[in-house]
Image (tube, rainbow, N blue to C red; front, side, top):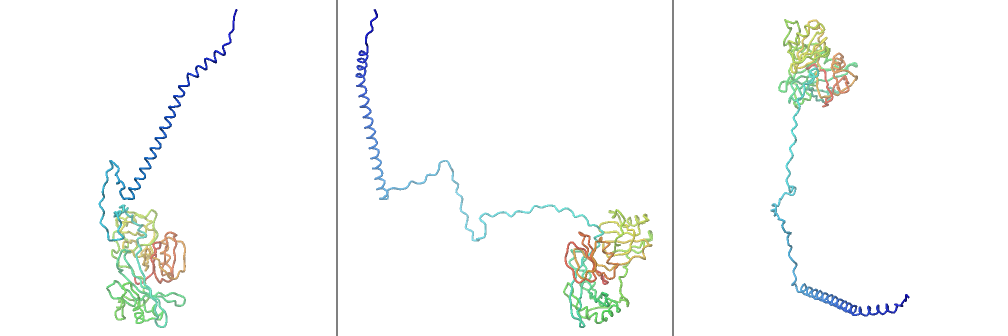
Length: 402
């Protein structure tokens, strides 16, 4: 027979015994915790007191001057370099650190190729203009000075002229020439007939020439002028130059030194690197060639289908076949490069440089021209009064004195 017992009371009794046995341990833990709290409180009080005492002591020490700041301690293992002081500079504008002046980079200048010999025939001319009252009228006196080139420090020839309107025609009057800065001036130059057209005689022309403005600033009295024994009665026209070579007996060419035949170049010109004799021989073998211009400076040969107008050029040698000798006309144009002349313009149009020269030479009303190579523009002037520098212009004027 299975008997079930009620054990609840027994279990309660056992649990009570267990709890009673744990009471001493809990009490011990509580006592220990209380001691720890008291010890921590005492430690905090002691620390606070020590800090207060230290603060009071520091305050008294600073007040009494006993407390000193600690010296600065340099950082370890870092060497210090002492830089000696520079002496004081009394100049206020001197920089603290002088800088060397940079030297410009030396760029080699490329050689300048020779210019086209057909344009090298120009010279350099400067003008001086002066207006005066003479014989109850105003006269404009123009003095031209011819330089061999732009680098020439002194002119080698000078002349003075004027012009007057007579019955609608501008008459050019040559008054005086100077063949060098140290020589006596020559006056008058124009023929008596020309002087009479503008109301002058030989003596009044000389008197008028005493007022000419020269670049060297010199003035001359009437007695300082000499007369030209070669002066003719009629109008002076450009005289043919002295034939320095004459007629070549071997080729039959008429050879003239110091002059250039303008225009009429054959195709594919010039021929470079030849002698003057080779240039003439090449023309002699070519039936289309009637003349040549040989540039002695550039050793360049220009074969030409015709020759008519000759202009001065110190570096040129002209040779023409006998068949065209009678057509040669020695122009009195004087050229200037990098120079523009001013005056009365009567025609402007597009022409090549040689054609511009020929146009002025062939027209009696033309006394000067300007040529602008960039626009290929030619301007003709019926009178020339002054000149100015202009690198884009080549010009020329007519002068019987040259």
